View (cartoon, rainbow, N blue to C red):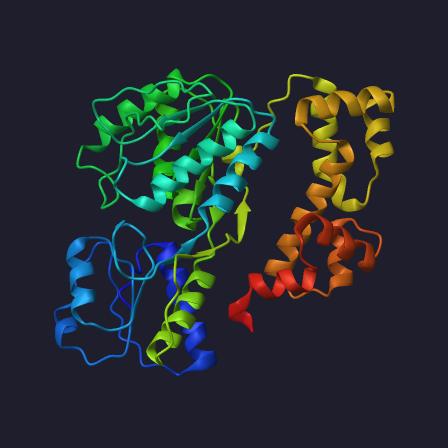
Length: 405
């Protein structure tokens, strides 16, 4: 396992591989704690193993893995032409979760904070797909990436060409070599130039942590003026940020588990995956960095807060109408005009999100999950879950927690 132990995502993958080994092994696993971008171990060229699971960060590591002529899986996705199967996160779903979460705050201005184009294909794709989600909803998106001499430009929604603007990096293998102060000054200037309030997706947690710091330097209040969502859900970075940072958990455990499963098949002579194997994220973990509600209509804002506080208590639309003291027809028209969906759909969305969390994180029976999510009975819950997701709750739980089988 040539996987870094210095990051939460890498540690999650290691845990998933270990779970697979306990169930289908045992395997003898060569592993040394290391950071991302570490050099190939000296023993690799003469190692008599059967397969390799690696987070390949550069061509040196790629060449070393390929030279072994062993079955291998790449868990990094950084090199675009690498002739090794890739297993990683589903960026389409990750970016959709980020956009929907920000849009649900009532925002209509969006931005993406990434890394230099061409530095990592998965992050390039993450940028492109977030922009696509924003533009498909009829909005525009500012982009900031790591070119130190470029300036950010507002993208009209009709412009499909990705324009990279300067984003400072942090001094790690993911970014450039400029100093922290220079990068933070540039990033703070970009944040200050954005329309407010704005929803910003950071390509991953290190960039998100940097973004929160830049907002403080620019006197941009988080989350009141800038709601921030990142990716990886690294507890150290997310909780070190001030305020704590919302982040999407890409489910490193499942990525590692599925990678071990594919490698096992390749070791016994079966073909590897024909294309990338993309794993859906586990969940968006909401923290204070995105806890805002940018709705100008005070009655609708009051209704949204009430729904989010009480949806899982089984309330109906009539309860919301009474809370805002408005005729139902006027309320539903204004609500849909602002949020793009009906109050009933918003209630159901909150309930389904809660049920997903309980299915993923607990062993509660379906009847208990139905009650805690605000559904009157298990059958109604199961039918509603199927209509919204295309899966029965038991199927969703089984697929989202394969390492627990």
